[in-house]
Structure formats: C-alpha cells, structure tokens
Length: 126
Image (tube, rainbow, N blue to C red; front, side, top):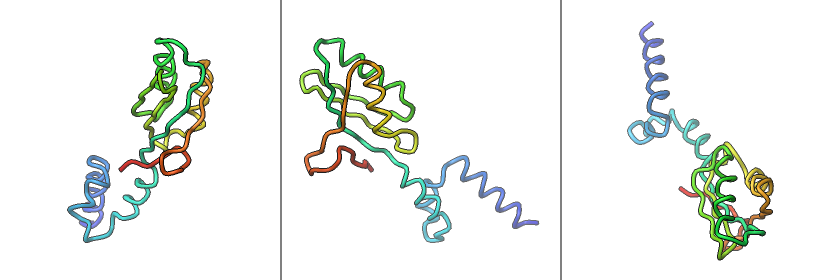
C-alpha cells in the first residue's frame, strides 16, 4: 500500500511540475529519461518563409495575423523589405505545410527557404 501512495504522489508531482523539471534533481535515477526524450522530440522549430505578394505596409500585418491563427505558433517576425516571415512554432502542434497554407489562405503564397547552412528551412532551437 505505501508503494502505491508513493507512486501516486510521484505521478501527481510530475503532472504539476512537468517531467523535465525533475530530470536535474532526479537525473541519476534515470527513471525520467523516457519522458524527457519524448518531450525533446517534439520541440520548438524556426522556419524562414519567402512570402510573395507583399506590396504595402499592411501586408506584413495580414501575414502575421494569418500565422497567429495556426495552433502552436509561438513567435512571428515579418519583413516587407525582405519579403520574409520567420516563424517559431511547436512541431508537435503544427508543421511548415500548415504555415504555408495559412499564408496562402490570406492571399500570400509562401515557401520555406534554406538557411545559411544549406538546410531545409527549419532548425530546432534549444
């Protein structure tokens, strides 16, 4: 019976503070590694989108408004001069296709562009 209570309390603690906050103090136990690994796979990503059709000062606002409606989007920076949107999002909740669909629905076709290292336009941020 005491073991059941201890496990219930441990489960409650994890639900309240999150598994990653316990990895530091309890890391030697190794019991939280599966939780930390699954959370690490679903992380924050940043993509650069080349946005066509932006011609006036209100266009970046419209692009940003469309991207804000996508669940999982955390940060958006839109540049009229560069015809570029930089979007940070939770890849467990959305993907690049949903972002490009959102801009297209607002009347601004977009596509991911390669980063400076020649990647595919997304990079994990940690």
